[in-house]
Length: 134
Image: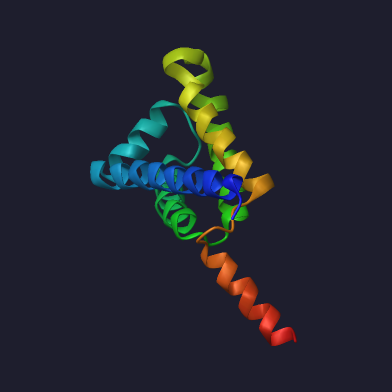
């Protein structure tokens, strides 16, 4: 195992847990309240967006932790963070604005381009496909 694999594993788990906690917090707050907040930001379809964002954060967070569809969810998290920065956080400036979103986006970009197979469910699926193709 390479050290970069273990480093990628740490990034994957921390990113997954972070998104899961943010999604779960939205669920606990109540998606109606989240939709009201999104409406205050003048985002289109705030109710639908509240469910989509919370669902992506919860499901995507779990999937990153277990290592399933890492690149797909990394890409979706990059889009989510880019959307948050463009529509809400950019006006607040870097500090206390979009710096955290940029960090999460960078972590997701690392996983998108480098992926991470260490203790990943994707690893076992690929191995099963290779066995069937032999």
